[in-house]
Length: 92
Image (cartoon, rainbow, N blue to C red):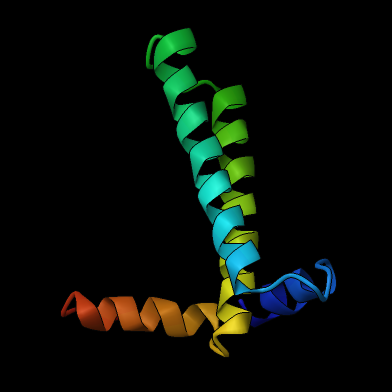
């Protein structure tokens, strides 16, 4: 995950701030939801390979923005995952 975070940082503009990243992740989550809506509307709730790929592509965009937010918070994606596991009372 650290490699991905370094890659993501290399693909963004230096002027992107936390607000930009937050707005971006919101937009991308909307695109994930839109593809899932189309699953119901267009695909009779049958997950086709094409729809699966489209959802995965949009989730990749969500991950890009998540990584950018983490960088601005000076934490790693792994830190976020571990914090969530702890919050939920679990262990891995």
